[in-house]
Image 1 (cartoon, helix red, strand yellow):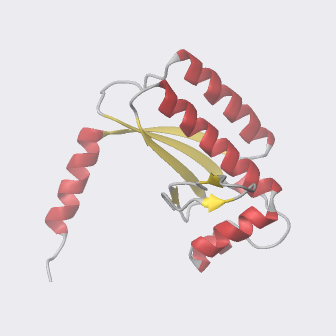
Image 2: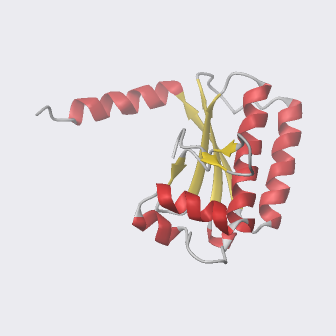
Length: 149
């Protein structure tokens, strides 16, 4: 779903529904960690998308057009009712910094606001740190296992 913006709200407005959907019912938003602006954008993106999925059947219909039939069934994107209680919004931050994820103060406020709103909509919420070194190692293993045809 990354970079598959959905025009919504009139004018030139568009929304990226998410970066990844898992069949485990996770709506995943991913950003590289570079500064407070990226964190705030990440948290707003997840909240805005989640609100639209709950409140706007037309937005759900547009998302449904862009996903597999299996994902559409798992996320119940058809119909006028969308139950967020079985869905988890995951904020994933890719970073090259080791140790605990360090979120700037104002971004923490944005996260707290997003989590409150998401929980009010009945979503569960998680934040995940993806370390670049671990990601590179995993990609390296995948490349070694891949067969060339």
